[in-house]
Image (cartoon, rainbow, N blue to C red; front, side, top):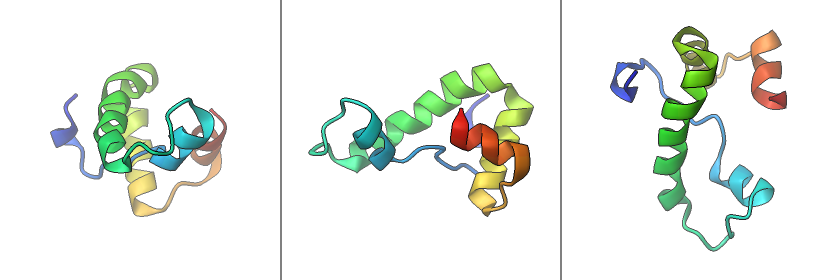
Length: 77
């Protein structure tokens, strides 16, 4: 589903996370990475989690209200 249908969009990872845990160099402008994170989430993560769970995570992260098993899912997987 397209991003325009989401009530709240939040990036589930930050550019800093990519710099730390991947081979992406720290010299890359984070503003160049942000659109890639958005596209990757919308196409790959949503396909794995399903629309309902994906939207739930997005809304909880955007609202700062992620707790319990949802927080474990986000932080550990």
